Length: 245
Image 1 (cartoon, rainbow, N blue to C red):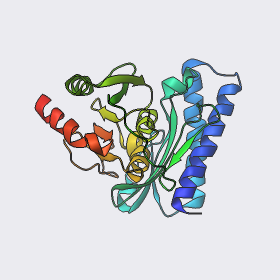
Image 2 (cartoon, rainbow, N blue to C red; image 1 turned 90 degrees about the vertical axis):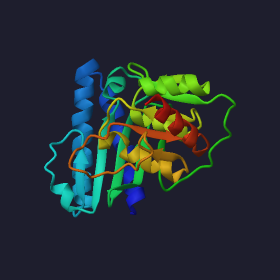
Image 3 (cartoon, one colour; image 1 turned 60 degrees about the vertical axis):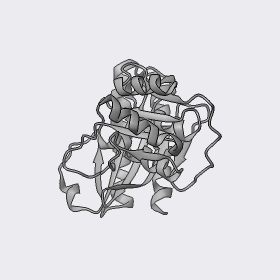
């Protein structure tokens, strides 16, 4: 099984497990989110230990020992991206399974189990990007949209599309539901490694909001901002961010 096939399989199975936990009827709200995080994380860690025993792992739901820094290959996973949305039985949550090689998000799969029938987007199966509408759409947090995103939307005449998890927002750009995902409110490497791998494979622009590269497997897990967008919009958006300061 290739790395990409493994990432997709793990994301798919973890998504199914999470749906089963939610449909068990035993948990609601925050307890549901906690149960989902724990069960999905245990599955992913055990599976990676068996399938890729020589690779490092960084997970949101496990203590970071920093031994991963000695590894060239590090799996970066988010067992439930959008725990609030998962706990509220919404559809805009995700499972992230990404592989960083030499600090770059090379392989990834993002499962969207909450959608009807479920969906997994992956770095090894690329579909053509759809035509863009005349008015660009920017996906933003449904609870705390980034001020830079709001300012850029106003500057370029864009429409806002509120959404939950980072993975759901990034995949909305991949799927053609939006053209720009600009985030500046703080994230960690597990929030965007897999989405960036998938987005980059589909030909999207992926960078920090100052245009610098996204670097993974650093000692500090924080990765505070990112831009995932259609390449046609990258230069304009980056220019507007610089202008905003």
